[in-house]
Image: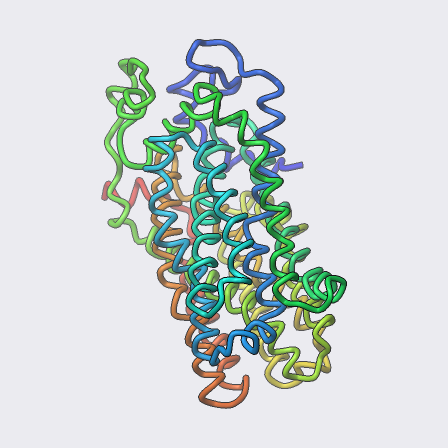
Length: 453
C-alpha cells in the first residue's frame, strides 16, 4: 500500500535500526518478542485514538450557532473558542514527551482518552461560557498529548511499517473528523434537538478508546519502555534514552551525537511556519465553514455535510499525498497545487457560497490535505529518528502557536464587518505565504546539514 514511503522510512529508521538490531521485531526488556495480542491491542488503540482526535472540534463547528445562542456568546468569544484547540495543542503538546518518559506513552494516551471523555461529558452542562471553555480545554489537553505520542508509539511498535501505520492513523483521524461533522446535526435531531445531547454523544467514542490501552498500561516493559526511549531521543542522546529505560547503553549509543540545534535550520523554520499556516486554515475551516454556509442560506444539516465532505477528503489523500511526496525530490509542486485549490475554494465562498457549495467544499478539502504533506516532509527533512522527533516537536509546537490568532481574528472580523467578505479575504491572503514557505520547506535537504553548517 505504501510503497512510495520507502524513501521516508529509510531516512527515519536507519539510525534506530543501527542502534537496535531487534528493531524490526519489537521485544520487551527481557529480550522476548512482544506478544501478538499486545500488538493487536496497539493497532486497535491507535485507530480508536485517532478517531477521537477531532470530533471534539468538528462536532462543535456543526452546532456553533446553537452553542452561541445557548450560552450568549459574541462573535469574538466564539472566535476565541475556535482558537482554543491550537492553543491547547501548543501548550499541552510540549508536555507529552516528559510525561511519556515518566509514565510511559501507553499510560499517557490512556489518560488522554479519559480526559477527552470527561471533557466532552462536562462541557455541554458546564453552566456558562467559562465552564464550556474549561471543559473544552480538558478534552483538548487529552487530544494534544495523544496527538504527539501517536507517532512515537507507531515508531516503536512498528518500526518496519511506519508508512503504512501512519497512513492508517491518518485515515482514521480524517474519518473521525468527517463523521463528527456529518453526523452531529442528525444525531442532535434524533436526540430531541438539544445541542447539549448532540455534543455529549461523542464522549461514548472517546470512552471506547480508553479500553485498549488499559492492559498496555500494566505492560510497562512491553509498551512503554521502548517508546520512552524514543521520547527521550527528542531531548538527549541515545545513551540518555537507554539510561532512562533502565538499560546499559552500548558503545555505539555512547558515541551518538547530542541533540541538534534545530533552530539553526532554515528548513525547520520554513516547515514550522508552513505547519502553522495550514493549521490556521484547518481550524478556521473546522470552526467556521459550516456557519459560512448557514449564513448563506444553506440548511444546517446540509452545512454539516459540506463540512464533512471537506474533512473526508483527507481519507484517500492521506495515502496518495505521502506516496507522491516521497517520490519527488522537491515537494514544492504539491504545495503549490494544494494552495491553488485553496485559493479557488475561497474565491467561490466569496462570490457564490451557496451556489457552488459542494465544489468549494471539495476544493477546500483538497487544500486542507497540506496536513499529511507537512507530516511527510517532517520525515523527509531529517536523516535520523532522533532528528525526526526533534523536527516534529519543533514544527508542531511552533506551528500551533502561529495558528492561534487566526480563528479568533476571523470571529472578530465577522462581528465587526457584519459579514463574511473580509474574513474570507483574510483566509485567501494567508494562503499566499503558506505556499511560499511550503516551497522552501519542500527543498531536498536535511535539518542536520543546515544545523551543522
